[in-house]
Each structure stands twice: as C-alpha cells, then as structure tokens.
Length: 503
Image 1 (cartoon, helix red, strand yellow):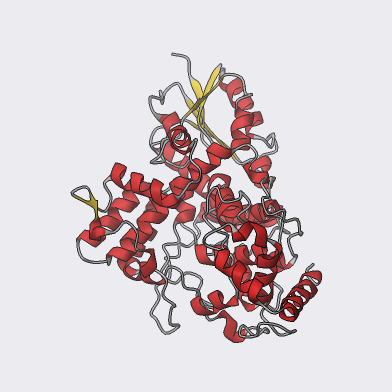
Image 2 (cartoon, rainbow, N blue to C red):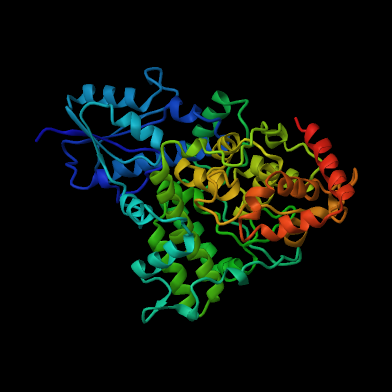
C-alpha cells in the first residue's frame, strides 16, 4: 500500500482526529510544522505562540511513542519554507507520497489555501458536536438566529441536563442566577501552574529570540502543554471552582484575573480536551450533589451552546463575515489596547491582564474592551484582529463571531438580539475597578465623568433611528429623547472631546 502524508495542525492535537482514522502506521507519515505564515498573519501573543509550539512538540513526542512515524519541522529549521503548503510539498516529495490527508482547518482562509494543494484530501472535523453544514441548513431562511433555540436542540441531542425529555430543574437557562458581584474576600482557587519542562524551555527561548517585540509577557509560563496536564487542570476546576463558577461567572475584580473560571479554553480549542467529555463530567458533579445547577448549566451552555453556535455562524457566513460593519464604525483602534496605558481603570486592568496572561474572561472581553470599542465606534475588523492576536484561546472560528456579531453588533443583529452597550454603571455593579479610577462613575457629564457614561449616550444618539426599532434598546432612545436639549448638547460635546483625544 502506498503511503500518505497526514498533516496535523497546531489546533488539532487530538488522537481522535479524522485524518488519523484508518491510517497505516507503517506506510503513512505524520507531518507537523511550525511555520511563520501561521505565526505572523496576526501578531499573536508570545504566550500563545509558546503554548502552541510546545503543545505541538509534546503531541509529536507522544505520537512517536505510540508507534507513529512523525516528521516535525521546527520554526528555526533553516530548510523551513515558512508555509504549511510548502512543508507539505516537501514532505510528500521526501517520502514519495502522491497523496496527503488533513482534517478540515478551523479557519476559512486556510481551507481556501488547502483546496489548491495537489493530492490533498480534506476530511470533516467531527470533534465538534454540531455539523457545520447541518447548522447552515438549520439557519438558512430564519429571520434571526438566537443561541437559546440552538442550545435547546443541542441539549436534546446530547441528553445533557435532561430529565425525561425535560430540562433539569424545569428551566433551560439559569443565566439570571449567574450575575452576582464578587467580594474580594472570597477564597478563590487559582488554576494549576505547570513548570516548563526541557521541551517548553527550548520553545520559550526560541520565542523570546524570534519575537522580541511581540505583544505579551512571555514568562512566567505556566500553561499545560500535554493532554494529561490539561485534564488535570480541568479536574481541579471541577473540584475547587465549579461550585461557585455559575454565581460569579460575570464578576470582575482588580488583581483577580481568574476568579472561579475554568481557564481551560486554550486547551480545549487546541484539541487537548474533549468538549462532550468535559460537559458530562460537569453534569456528573451536579447529579452527585457537589455543585449547584446554575453552575453546571452555565458551564455546559458555554460549551454546547455558545461555542458550537458561533462556529456554525462562522462557517455559514464566511467569506465576508470578517468585514461586516453594520454600524459604520471606522475609528482606529486606540494605542492603549496594546500598551494598557489609560486612565480608565477597567480598561487598564483588563488589557494589562491580557498582556500578562494571554487571557481575560468573557465579561472582561464583552463588557469592558468590547463595550468601549462599540461605544467609541472602533472599526470592528481592527478589534477582531486585536482579539485574535492577544488571547491564547483565540482562533478565528470562535473569536470572529463573538467579536463582530456579539460584541460589536457589526452584523446588524444576525447573532445578537441587541448591541451589548452599557454605561459605567454596569462595570461598577459587576466589579471594583471604579474605586481606583481617575474618572467618577457617578458623574454623568463634565471632565471627570466616566467616559463610558458619555459614550453610551453618544452611541444611543448617533444610532437612535436603528436602536428605536430594537425592542431591547428602544427605552434607551426614549430616555435620550426626553433629555433637555442643553443636556443632550453637553453630553454630545463631552463625548466628542473625549473621542478627539483617543490615539
């Protein structure tokens, strides 16, 4: 039997990969390659680069130990062509292979490239719970898509948190019980930290040398880079953080980047964890009486609801979804998104944390960095590229819909039922950031007024015709219209003055 080259990508670190099924270990050759084209298409955080390269090297090591023949091309190999296509051609020529196989990549741009590579068979990625073509068939023709409807289908399909055909606890969604503010005195567990081994240490040295000016603190580096360690990190979350996860999942605290979050999305999105196994483990904790239902449901909704939903939207709407701009927002991304140097305490905290950890939880992304960009009219494509660059768990299929659809409403309401626009009052309610801010979150106008307050009304005013037709935003428009003309004028003037100072 003539052998094939089996290409495995850096976010496909799973032994259950479709491309590996039915392979002939004696004749086939696995190819893994670190290439500059993938490291450079956005300026990825240095921790993300180190995580992906180290996890790839450990995965290759494990495959060799399991009897696979593996070609591994390092980034600093002098013969490295710098592209996946170039490395695949080299490997096929090296081994005399006329055929190659790969599991479908997670990004549209890469799939288009692969369709041009001779001899390559592209297999569906069935590590997800929803088939992307089936999602498109479900979505086509609907006036609007709502994750809640899709989520209920997924609950029925998987049987998760179902009792006799009905949702456990009599409700599908416990989000209303997941919005408590956190007390700084709470005992909050930290995610486990894994000391770099020799392989990771070598990767860290390479990233430090080759990407000295990239965004992000490289060390301390504590990520899990193997399936065993990723599973250990998730097991610790189940025992120590999941019971409080639901209640405090929307809370934010200065100096507490993790609170009760799992902090395993980086591992999950790279293939080191299995989504259905994770959800079944969470359900088992609830059925054993060790965690409340709001925590179990909140976690499972994030995995089989949002994660699968945004992937479906991504593939259904690409190409072109990355350039949607329904609100006609074109302001450049402020420099402080890279430096963290701003007088707004919430933004400074979230961006500094992102720089140091390559991580921020969903409310920090949606209601701080995302909310500010929405209110200020930042170009959604620029924000999308920033999110894709700075988070270790960011791959375009999951990040793009969350950014342009959920956070920026740039798709005009395809994904979200309303713009996630909020004044400083929301941030004050859900965090302690405002206590140390140079601005006054209670002030509605003037030089010390919280810019979120000014920009909220500026946003409502400049989009009032569109927002007046949205049932969830119409009240805000009516409130703006009731303001006296001199108050409207002052709010507009103060917001414009702040926006003029953005750089």
